[in-house]
Image (cartoon, rainbow, N blue to C red; front, side):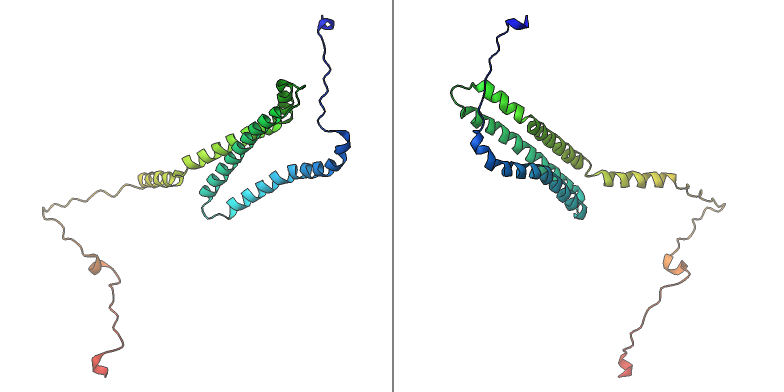
Length: 188
């Protein structure tokens, strides 16, 4: 059955062999940059967040920047595919050129979606938790207030006259003192 399927051997010349030599150095630079640029970006992002005064804002800004970078990478891939497929020679079909482009850029497309998704998720979580500290303080305040010992019951007296109100200034063991100035008109 497999012998009945026609096989077309199609060769697509991506680059003539004579032009391959000078491009090897540039390809090596791209390989090195492809590893170290993301590492440098991650180090700068973590350092920026660590030294930020408002870390939640720094995390949100970094996450939104990451999402924007992923969206721009995805847009660049779509535009690049359009120009690549449009510039193919007449003997190569658009479907074949598009399939090759898609195969070569599949990892970049995955990374673009990953950057967009992770960036938006982290920014969303940072935005949703912006009041978490205040809410936690509010809950802890009410929990500690409810756990405190109840106040002593009011003592009832047999006479019906209310107790006199106390003045805190007169009841304190150390009454406030007035400081006199060293200057007096009599000393002149």
